[in-house]
Amino acid sequence: MSAILDNAALRAASPAGALELAEQADGPSLRERAVHGAGAVGSTSAIANAFDDTSLDQLFAAPRTPPLWGVGFVAALAWAAFGAITLRWPNKVVGFSDWAFTDELGVVALVVAAALAVLSVAGRTTSPLLRLREALTGSGPWLVAIAVVLAGWEILTAKTASLPTPFFAPPQALIEVYTEDWQRLGDSALNTLRLLGLGFGFGAVAGFLTGVSIGWSRAIGYWVHPVLRVLGPVPATALLPLTFYFFPSSYSAAAFLIALSTAFPVAVLTWSGVASVNKSYYDVARTLGASDVFLVLRVAIPAALPNVFVGLFMGLGASFSVLVTAEMMGVKSGLGWYLTWAQGWASYVNMYAALIVMALLFSGVITLLFTVRDRALAWQKGTVKW
Image (cartoon, rainbow, N blue to C red):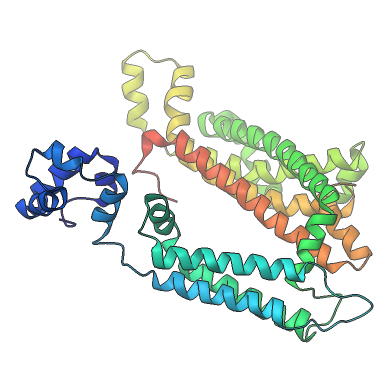
């Protein structure tokens, strides 16, 4: 039956329809088992009444979902070991105070271990647990690795002090930063997002318009192309002294540099996409009476969108580097400024906390770009590959 029917499709169907499809694939044996469970012989609808949604999930997941999730059980043991190490192994006090939130971290680790153990052993008892287990199956090795890394980190810092303080801090120190300094860290993250959105937005629009102009008009390309060839490869951070001189504030200078680092890859790849559009598309549209504006808006730009999104992705990566550098050099807010502030106070645990926030923030922005790309290019699904 599993070779013919997809389990997810069966669960999405109604119980009666699912049993009907399963009977067609598996033969009368399924009906006989269903009749035996229901206590009487009846129609497919009557037999389906003997099964609720959970029973159907268990029935159709059985060929693919083993009773015991082995990797999940190993992950549960790893998290339990991490929790036991955190709670039972005394901290080695360095300085005048012990690490705060040690007990809380150990309790959280044990709770995660208990949850993973339940999913591993009894993950098929209810439909919600089954779906959650299937969602986490692919991440099982990562769950084990994260617990092992956290345990090693805890041992080398809080338990043995093998890594010297204040340069290295245990995991519970991050909890202290997030609970006590969340306002300053949150304001810095919001300011970073605001500056990134301003610079990236202007750069993406400018690069897109420049690329379309170059790709469509040879006259514009004659003048703009050499400028891009010469100034485009210059790192935007090399222009920091000039921008700080010409612009009225360090914030506006940083926004300009972010826009500049974004505009170059967007312009080049948009130009490449427009220039590589099949000429027969234009010929067919002109035969049907299309104007030049129609050709640009409805033929050239849609065909070049895959290249445009590649340029946006490259520009986003470049803008991250310029953003942090500008915040460190002159902008008085943002995660880059927070890193410099924490370094000045030798508070390295604050630096680690800011780096984690920065990684999650930038990763989320890239994920958002991918989501927009998938929706914008849904009509080209199957032809666009990154």
